[in-house]
Image (cartoon, rainbow, N blue to C red):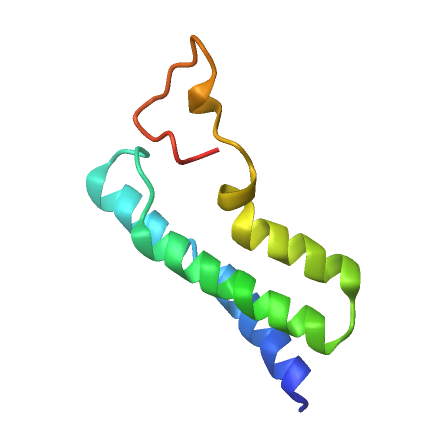
Length: 94
């Protein structure tokens, strides 16, 4: 199994399990407010691994998509600066 295969399977597994912490948090708190830090952390790691995989298999469109997904909070201007815009306490979430 090549390094690209290992990275591809690792990213797939991370994307699959990243929602488990959120499910547990929602079940315990009985509310859907807020995000589990573990969900966000595993998702970021999965996106980095997927980007690394895309680079190894030389698939430029996937590289661009994964780079954007990993960094969109840094590149998209926040809507909170717009006049009259009201946030729900989580202005960093798009």
